[in-house]
Amino acid sequence: MKSHHLSLALFAALLCLCESYTLRNSVSWAVASNDVVVEGELDAVSEEEVAPALLVDNSGLWKQAYPPSVLRNGAEKPKETVKSKKEDAAPVSSASRVFSYRMEEVKAPASAPSPPPHQETARTARYMAHYSDWGHLATISTQDKIKGLPFGNIFSVSDGPMDNSTGVVYFYVTLMDNSVADLRSFPFASLTFSEAEGDFCRQQVFDPEDPRCARLTLTGKMVEVGPEEVEFAQEAMFSRHPVMRKWPVGHNWFFMKLELKQVWLQDWVGGVSLIPLEDYFKATPY
Figure 1 (cartoon, one colour):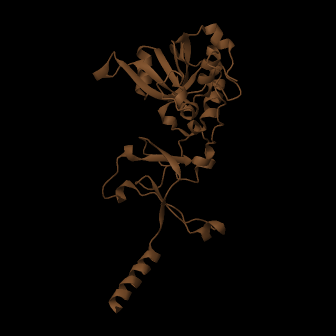
Figure 2 (cartoon, helix red, strand yellow; figure 1 turned 90 degrees about the horizontal axis):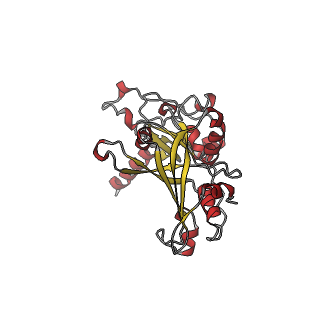
Figure 3 (tube, helix red, strand yellow; figure 1 turned 90 degrees about the vertical axis):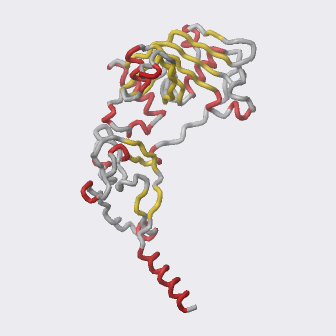
């Protein structure tokens, strides 16, 4: 019995000596840069000049936790250091490095109002283009194994701030993306939205392929936003996707928009609607 109690005492002592670690409440993105920005220095540097703070250890997801008393008393946290490559027995590939940003900076979007009556096709199309936060973009691929074949990808989008819908869909992209590389070769694409993205179809128990669960496809030419329009494009994208401000500047992000050629909508049984562009832009999503 004594040896049993002694083992428990030793185990308890070891636990007290151990540093505790916790999983961070953060979102991470793999980057190729070897540069590390220590958390705490980020506020002193312009958001537009540097990527978000990198997590301090090469495992990527864990950060030292501090006892509640330290945080309550406002005491200074122990300084965190970044291990150099020389100290690592097995150097970690730069591709495994990640950066992190505070989740509280991203505000939850307001829920969309109920969709318009299905008979109002132009308004329904504008409603879907405005209240959708992301869509599926189809391009003609330039990848070696599927060159000339369709290729689909997901993109975050915005047709303007929540109180200023334009019907023109904007993108924030990088040439490191396969789809954007495709567009340099053939700039035409189709962007598809589904009402299944929101709550309506689930509440009505509509399958995403049910015609009553509306789907909208906008087809046109993808062009880079000109200097006179960049400020609005930035407001449109960053107001709806604030985390984009923290994306790594080394990826050379830029704004694009879709110049429409066709608006295709199915929002009810019995066929589809090809909405004239004039009617589409005259309609309002509100």
